Image (cartoon, rainbow, N blue to C red; front, side, top):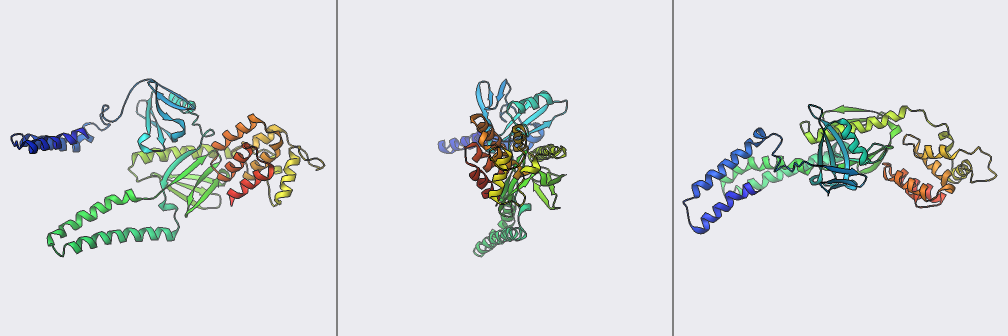
Length: 386
């Protein structure tokens, strides 16, 4: 900004003092800066440390965030997702995406071990946090919404052309502005794209699909395929969901694309683990709410006179916290444990809710953490699952 302002300021001084002696020097300075601006990517492809925000020094990381030279660098609550990029020679860059892009942090460390230690200090392991990725909404729209967007784009181009042609009626030279106007319109279109957030937790993912919020449990994902800066999530119902992170040569989109794929594949590995045999006793199936609640209380040992074998407390906790468990089984485990909740258990549930992506399960966990009764826990789940 200073470099751009310097020729303009010098030109204003010459104009104000009516001194034209230095006008040629001002022009040469502006020309030199323009040439330097265009050749900067070749001269310094990685930027200049003084001007690109690069700083070196010790930092500290914990569950509260990162401090650099004793000053806060980024707060843990601001981090949307994390990705590790390998560099030639073994160096690693840890990319931390913030709620606002201008607060993104990129940290270069010596090796993969230190990169993963940094993420562990921030509690950014897949089982301990919910990651949020921004993707183009376009592939997730319905056919009607997709056609409407294309019609709007075409209408905008026609409107811009019409305005230029109308103004050219008075001055034919304005016809020369038609091509630049359409070029500017084409350059601005990518900035007008609509994006949506994909929230990815250890239990599944949530996003807006065809104008509505949709939640996909981990158990419903068959596989995830990789394409250039795109990920195709294949569901067990044979439905394919396309998540586009950016154009093919977008370096930042490539990093987020890789982080998303790694995170999904890492969580899918858990699907091959054997399921807890107690899970089948907790699922709702076709039971009515009242019957299911009474059955669950009996499993937890809180309902007398109901002949059913109780489940051990550690089994119930294992199912409640199991990210690959059937969703109603997890809610059932919460209900069965309801009578045993103390302050430590409620804090445990609150932490679990903060890293759960599915809104219905998160609502049930939050209700249980808040001390809600059995009916309220089930109602919270049912309300968000509709």
